[in-house]
Image 1 (tube, protein in one colour):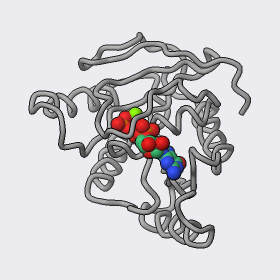
Image 2: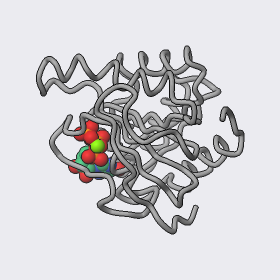
Image 3: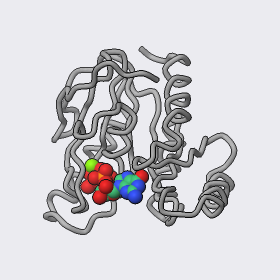
Image 4: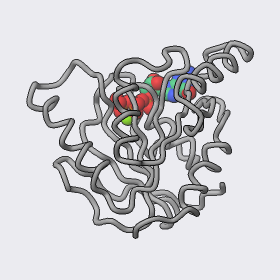
Length: 197
Ligand code: GTP
Ligand code: MG
């Protein structure tokens, strides 16, 4: 999908914070340092829009990015990091869950999983939680550039079997752009499907 403009819209550091609901939103979830911000930058073709870092767990707030004022991509804080204060770690659940459970304009969640790690306990929990909320979800199996082509396809297929038939699994690389068009097709379907409001 061609993107003419993408800009930072605002952030939520406390439950219910951030910009008021507007255009349809798609949230990017995943383990700390898995490549969520890199995926956003790749989707919108802007290298430095969402801040990336080699230090895990740097993003402790929800960051909202407007794409051509017709879609908002939401960079969620990563889970699974062991750094930060106890208070910060306890704040993660309410912050993210308030958003996922209550945001009226949320149309779907892209769960980013390292293709080399696959589904671990935390991913199981997130998938079960999103299913309980009846939120549409797709998996971006990222960093396929780190595997040889055949090993990458095999790992993506194994992930697909693991998460079940109704969750699309897309092999992806922010480095090469592999899977970018397919992820946009998933996002476009969510937007076209509509929903409240
Ligand atoms: P937090 O916000 O800290 O949770 O991290 P994040 O999930 O936003 O990850 P980020 O996009 O900052 O990327 C983390 C590291 O992984 C960076 O060093 C990226 O360059 C690298 N990375 C991200 N995506 C890819 C990918 O597709 N391939 C490769 N090889 N490296 C990647
Ligand atoms: Mg990030």
